[in-house]
Image 1 (cartoon, rainbow, N blue to C red):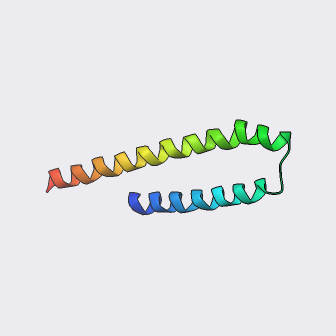
Image 2: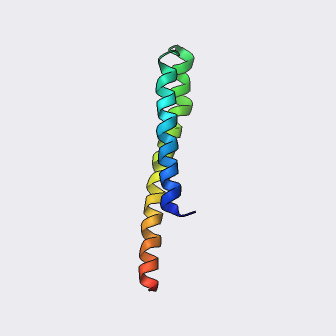
Length: 70
C-alpha cells in the first residue's frame, strides 16, 4: 500500500471519528465529558495532526528520492 493511500485513509477515518465525537457531545455534556475531551481527545487530535504532517513530509522526501534515482 502506498503512503498517499494510507494518508488518505487516515484522513477519512479521522473525519469519521471527529463526526462521531461531535455527535456524542450533543448527548454527553457533563464534567466527565469535559475531562475526557481535555485529557484524551485533544491530545489525540494533536497527535493526529503531527502524524499527518510527518506523513506528508515523508511522502515528499520519498517522491524526491525516487526522482533523484531516475
